[in-house]
Structures are given as structure tokens and as C-alpha cells.
Image (tube, rainbow, N blue to C red; front, side):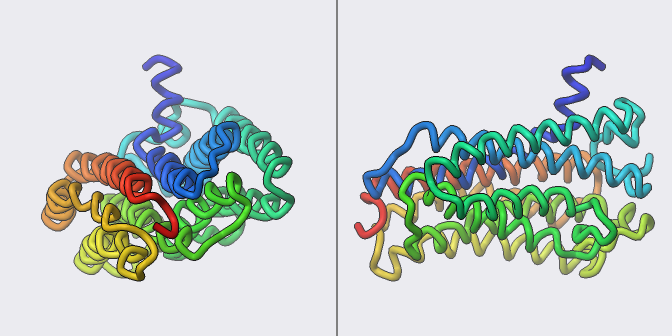
Length: 298
């Protein structure tokens, strides 16, 4: 394979919608509040992408060191465990990705306030400690919780804050469905790798719950996203345009069916990519609904 293709594999492009989608929702809320800072938007978007890529690279490196990425795993080949890239190069690329994220964060701190230092540091630390460090939380069944927090609540509310410098309750409520779908991406990944993770001693939430209950969890997360999206409208704050993401329900039903019935790698790899696509489509529709309805307080 070419070097470019290998590094694209290492970056795990299928997971990147989880970084893009919350920034789009947070920015649509800012636009609805008549605030838009183009450079802050770009910095937030790039920062989120660099953190996601850095997390993926760190995961690739750390899982290989711990022996979690074995030859019998159903997912795509990991570049470190597969011998495609030397571990030192993967580690260097991890540092570069997080360094670029720090550069984006420095600009956001300059325009939006020092509070973002703690947010950025916590986001990077969460990315590293997912599979790194002495007690990786991804090995203890806490991965979905951290994804919900950092790729849902923090990412949406943070993208809004860097442009408006305040945090209304609607920003947190609108972050909930985004976080649920981001966590659902990880759930598919862990359902696919359940057996190999169990043998490697990686006690993900899927390993702890078992296949049947994890499948139900996936269905619950996807359903919860569609149920919670119109909550600001139900609370009398925003418009019924928040129902626009419901146009993605047919895709969601198809993905839930695949995760519920299939155990083979190709099908679950497709469901993983499909869940990333669902999140992106959902958030594009969600952002459009926020803008069509006039934003916060409409």
C-alpha cells in the first residue's frame, strides 16, 4: 500500500464525522444567535479533527503495545500491530496531531478566554488516556461515557462558546443527541471487537454487557438521539424545525437492524461507517433545523 493510504488507515477516517458534526451544531446555534466568528469556527473544526486523529493514532499505538490488536480481529488492520508503520513514527504522528490541536486551541483561548485552556487540556488528556497510561479508561468500559462528554457536550457547547462567549441551556440540550450518536459509533466498534477484546483482557462496555445487551444499548442510543433532538422545542424555546433530523430515521432503522442481526466483520465495519454517516447527516439536518427556526429563543 502507498504511504498515503497507510496513514489514512491510521487516522481512521470513518470516525472523523464524530469530530465535525458537533462543531456544525454548535456553530448553527451561534449563527441563530446572530454571532458567527469564521476564524473561531475554522479553529474549532480543525482542533476537533486533530484531537480525533491524535486519539486514533494514540489508540493504534497503545493497543499494539498492550497486545489488544491481534491478527484475528474483525476490524481493519491497525498500522502499528500490522507492522505497516514503526511504533516510533505512530507516536511521533500522535504528538504532531495533538500539537496542531494545541495551536488551534491557542487561537481560541486568545479570542474566547482562558477557560478554554482547561477544556483543551482535558480533551487531549482524554484522548491519550483512552487506551494509554497505567489505567486506560477504554479498557474499563468507560469509553462511551467519555465520548458522550467530549464529542457531545463539550464539543457542541464549546463550539458555541468560542463564538458567543456565553452558554445557554439550549447548547447543552442540543449536545445530547450529538453525543449519543458519537457514542453509538464506539458501541458498533466494540460489538465488532467483542471477542478479541475479551481475549486480550480489554473490558470494554460491550465485553461487560455482552453482545445482546450491547446491541440494545446501540438501539437505545440511536433512538435517544431522535427523541432528544426536539426537546428545546418541547420546552418552548426553539421551533418545530428541530424535527428535521427525523428524515434520517430510515437510515437509522437499517443500521440498528444490521447491528442487531450481524456478527461478521464486513457487515459491522459497514455499520461503523454508516453510523458515522448517520451522525453527520443527523447533525447537518439538525443544524439546518436550528437555522430555519431562528435559533435559540425562537
